[in-house]
Structure formats: C-alpha cells, structure tokens
Image 1 (cartoon, rainbow, N blue to C red):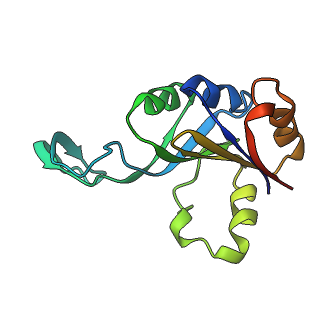
Image 2 (image 1 turned 60 degrees about the horizontal axis):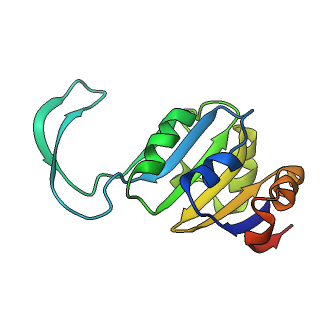
Length: 152
C-alpha cells in the first residue's frame, strides 16, 4: 500500500480527505469512551438478550457506518481511530483479528478495501492501494505543507 502521514488541524481536515466515491466505513475496535469508566447503556444481542439500564465499561467493537456516522464519531473525545473505507459492506465472515499477516492486504482488497486512515491525535496516516489517491492528498494545497512522511 502507498501511504502518507500529515498533521491535521480539525475534523474537517479528516473529512476532506475521505474518498467521496467510496460509501462504506468500518471502524476496527471502536471504543466510544476515552477512559475506562462505568456508564449506563441498554445491551441488545443477536440472540435476543436485552438488558435495560445495564452498566458497561471497556466497550470495544467493530462498527460499520457511512460518512454521517463517521462525522459523529469524529466529534467524540476519541483520539486514535482505525477507519477503513470499503467499496462494499464488510461481510460477517471477515474478522480482521483473524487474518493471516502475510495475506492480510490481499484479503482486505478482495473484500473491497480502498483506503485506510489512522487518526492519532493531530496526525493522520492514510494508506491506499491507489497511488493517485495519495498523490492527490500530497498535491492538495491544504495538506502539502503538513506532510510528515510519505511512502510508496
């Protein structure tokens, strides 16, 4: 994959880098809470279990959403996120934690992965199978002076 790392100044910077032609977003190991603490939530499982007003903590899960969901997530006080942009929804059988390291990229690409974004406080690393996508970011007047590292 080709990659670029740059400094961001706002969530709008991050939103401006996403590929508008790729509709599906997947957030791996999303944790909506920046600190380990108990909070109230309703818990519903696919087996039909419904617990109302339960207390939960260390909630971490994979999440599929669209650009509107990503906008909401970026407003949360979460400073590190792994966001994958897919051409189609991630199938039930694709579990990132179980992919063999040597063929991970190939499997993800065959399932529609186009781009990967790692937000790390004020830094954003973008990886893509498309060198022209990375080149467009590098040439963008908003971002070209904020590039930290470029590979590929």
